[in-house]
Length: 359
Image (cartoon, rainbow, N blue to C red; front, top):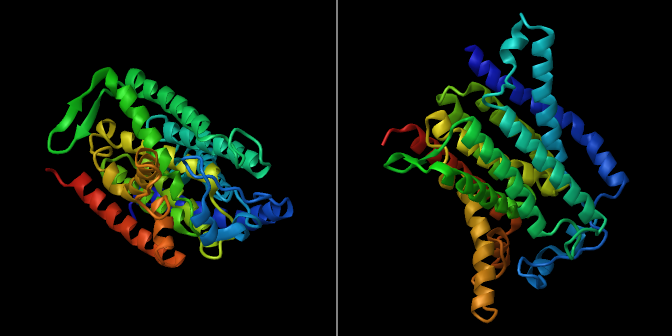
């Protein structure tokens, strides 16, 4: 088998194995220390109550099921990435040096952003568990989280623009478009909007399936751009998510929550830009296709808030975000999850096709 394919596939298997082995340890810790909301307090994005959500899920799902399951994902990714890097340096003349995928040009930035998101998300989860922070239900307020994401993406955009000389983006049917200094605000807006897709983490098994399809798609795109290290990193994330998903399918042993979803959504945005003009491809162009479930779900929340504020409290959906609307109209949770997975796979395939076919 081609060494490049081994470099991509083997670390993913290792990440999955690490996640599966680590989860019982984490689960024992989370349940022993009761790492869940001590009292269910759900507040809508607009600041009001959530009677429909409470009738669907009730307090039993909020209280008694640990948060911070996303730790499985980032521990697996970090241990795998640094593990192969360390082995590559211990045995510089061996096979491990060829399998090391941590590189300055392709994986330092996404790994750094991934770790930043995991750390900030972990703080938010801890605050929410203890009922502290700027949010009524505990945790960092949405405004604070958006500010943090904006600051991180701003710093990374400066690196792209000044250090990597990236000042163009891909445009459908037009090739690349020179945007100059406007690349920076575009970068920030895309990152913040994709981060808003964390609201998809609301039903057992839902977010894991969606995120794994997105990262797999970008792994394929990066591979055909000859960004092998980036492709390997994306597949490692997939392997880690699958380990998490093994324990998150109904009934969920734990929830991903912010420490996982913030890390993943921010990294998706970074990978999209890395597979765009930087990789001589269309990573940004196909982002709305590949991440469509995230985008539509986020938009459903925004539409609901705007409608309630501008139409005297009238709602577009029974409840937002969208996956809970489907539950409210009678779809069982497992049906919502499975259909989201199907749509995610279709979108991932279509995105890869549009990214690779020259039009």
